[in-house]
Image (cartoon, rainbow, N blue to C red; front, side):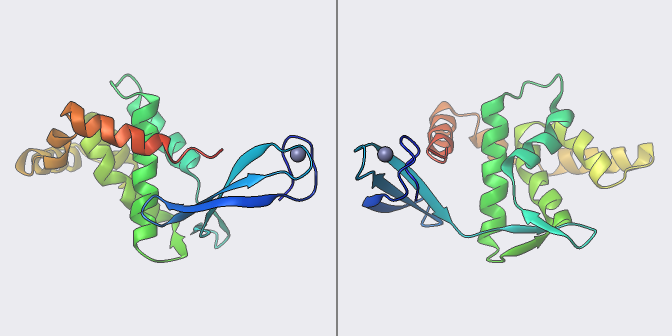
Length: 174
Ligand SMILES: [Zn+2]
């Protein structure tokens, strides 16, 4: 691994530890040339199969871009979106598949988005599931009322919210 400080073409691993439930390995490296230390992160590649059949790496940024529009005007901040994208990635990785259909990404977004904001969820679901009549909305709203999101209530407690946010920050790539 090239040193990001002096561009020396080699570095030494000084520490290696699993993070995020063992789905990632973080390595602390040291440059023998300039002595700078930096971190790298290793994770299995998660590929998304698009409708065209082409594959591309999973991207949290794309998940966020996909739901940001549905969240316009809603009390949802960037940390909320980052956490949602992290949960989507964890859900997809937990399936144990290395390649996942794009539509499964959309499905994995629905549950955490509902917990985050029900209006944003309805907007997203209306596009994702091709709602084309008021009856579709009414049916979905009836479902939302019939099955209150338990986790949504839990994440409203400050303790849980803080724990989740710190977990989100630990995943930032250095
Ligand atoms: Zn260096």
